[in-house]
Length: 243
Image 1 (cartoon, rainbow, N blue to C red):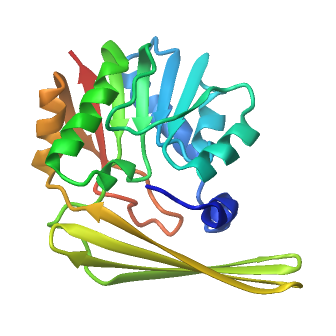
Image 2 (image 1 turned 135 degrees about the vertical axis):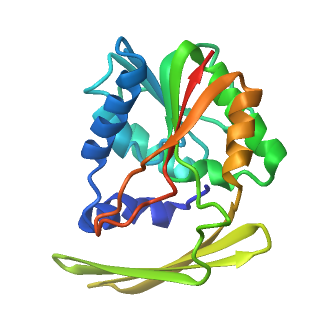
């Protein structure tokens, strides 16, 4: 998921103003990990974005690192966490040369894989960075069976001297989602408008499960993270253990 510099600038402020609790989500993910590996002390956050979850993970694990594909998002994460390694990398082929007790990939980023071959490659690279018996928690995008075609959303952030509106629209295009995000920013200098279009694949649950099986992991789908208004952010979370 490749967000540009303007999106990265407003990402945290917009989501936090909507009620998103990055620290609470990180604590819930850590608890889920420790249900399967109580001794987990190291964690890699794949597609770590601005590092909002990773900042909380740094207080919950002894050793954390992040990897991010979008340079603008990684730059925010590095500013936030100067002492935490934030690697540039693509989840399809990254190699950090080490393993971790746990790995997270949330925010639906894995759905940005173009096809099943890329999905299988991404899950394989993630599993390769986890110790035997280690835990992976991966948040998928919606499945074809529960995706809402034509879903629209909106939010307005009001701060001292600035108002930011964010509108979204998601439509189905074959086996993909076309997800458009539009921002308008108003402040003393005037108006700014920018938009981005993300293409996200509608993989079946079985596609994800097959990818984990190919990576020699057991896996189950559990309840997922919630949006501020109580709606689910995805169909759930895949929790996998590397054999």
